[in-house]
Length: 98
Image 1 (cartoon, rainbow, N blue to C red):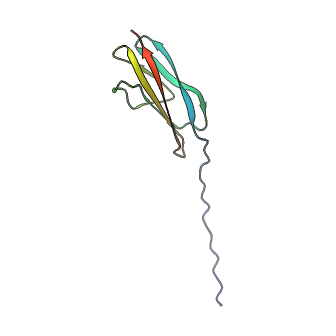
Image 2 (cartoon, rainbow, N blue to C red):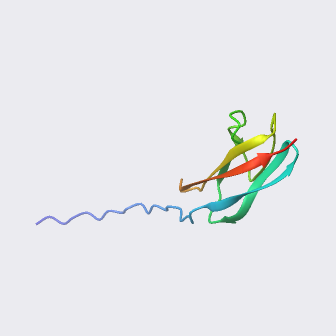
Image 3 (cartoon, rainbow, N blue to C red):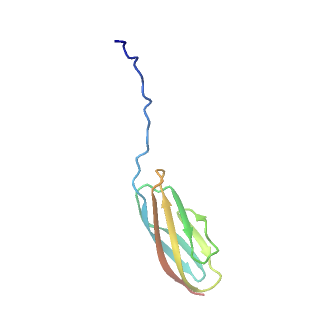
């Protein structure tokens, strides 16, 4: 019986991530609205915003300011991802006045 040669498995390190979550916070000054993460939890990596008017998709950052063209009610979407690619999405209706 032949002896087996020893082998060495390369140790892989995988990130340990807490799932991200937050509420949509905002302050409004007429048509200008600043969105921010309200009560963030977990590991926050990429943060994306859709202000709901069909024009502002792709805003990124934990705090963004957006100017709407007109008053109205909009459904804002917040999407958060962590380094493990866990995603969290939440929506909130806001009313903008001029």
